[in-house]
Image (cartoon, rainbow over all chains, first blue to last red; front, side):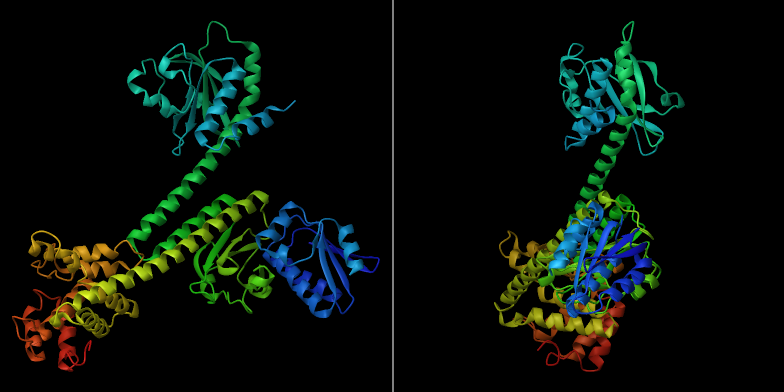
Length: 113
Length: 508
């Protein structure tokens, strides 16, 4: 897994590339933690380049979500393909996280937040 | 226009039932070849033989074979099914791997091998071939061979999976009758886990179950996990491997302790919460290895297994609740029987207490003590049925069997029904109702038998004065090795020597 960060109208978009499993979870946690740095921070994870995500990847997203909520920041995910979306629903995290179909939808929603 | 692959997959896999799928495959081949008779042979598990799995034949040749349909329908009309018939089994031969014409008992047939992933899965025989075979049809049939091989292989995998699942369910039902709930729950969960691993291609996995609401899930089945996984993994809801969010947030399950995940050699786990109305019942986790290798299909299967295990846990809990109240009813009946006569008052409670004291003296486990207590509280309940049966004394002899039959279908340790059924057996084979000897009598029955003897003798009845503890000890000593198991008798004698078999101290 590698990543790229772009700033789109005040929203930090983290584009992930490659599968997210146990071996990358720690790194991803640090990256997201760094950007969810306080009130007003807006972070969107672009999952469109992620073919697979497991419970550890989902765990990082939930941790980031809670951290953002605690810090008064906004956090969302977008662009999950069918397999990745399935993992969210199997683990029931789709009810917990802010998921958007497309990156543009996510950016728009976070800008309005 | 649809390709042969699309046609084959869409039409053959459309019906739900396996037999119908095979029949559609045959119809498709028969139509493409322009030949009315079609037989499908499938390679069996030994890979050395092929079995006739499905057939379609002309109406003209034999009226009983008129309807195209599953094989058994033809066989049902066996008496009218006149020769010639095709063999039900073929021995696999190298020449079967190539398309050719063969002479069979029903005429010359076109034989078409079906392959999937490079392996022979079956053989299609189409005919009858007259003097010439329609050339165009041959081309269309050739196109169908690969897709048919693929879809038939898939239909078989799905059918095997369905059968395995059905077998597993049947095993649960059977297991419930034979052993305690805890035992068959584990074996059934283990079975489902292995099926889940096989069908999803996961590398390893485990199932953890919450024994009582609010407790930490405990690993009850694991396959392929790192050595010591079950002992080392911390599944507590706060600070454990997984974070289990409260039901108000949807009851989601996510991996929270990444260091532990690496330490436990997890690669790419998907852990699914098993919930009943937001109450956690357990966790099903499959590990697909580093980088993961699962697709949507695997996730669909994972979900199917999760709901299967969830359903089973739900049923197990329902059954346990039912079982508890049923056992209480049986105990109530036993107590009511005791109250009918002065000399049997508290009989069941006192026998239970002596039996527990004997288990402790024999260094038995707490589980064994519990089982003997339950057996003691129920053991003579069969006498309730004895009175109504003709020939009263014979019926009395059967009261252990009758009593055991009242509870043996429940998910309880087998030693409870065993103790009730055998508490009048003697180790020398002179007891009743079956005349069992020594180890044929379960230990629980040997203990319960002695416990009842003590209570009956120290109570007395209308024709016999109660015995004192010295007399009881002397009788036990004398019957040691004939009526009583020597080890159990010795335990009773030690208790008696310490004054712990007195009616005032035990069961009162």
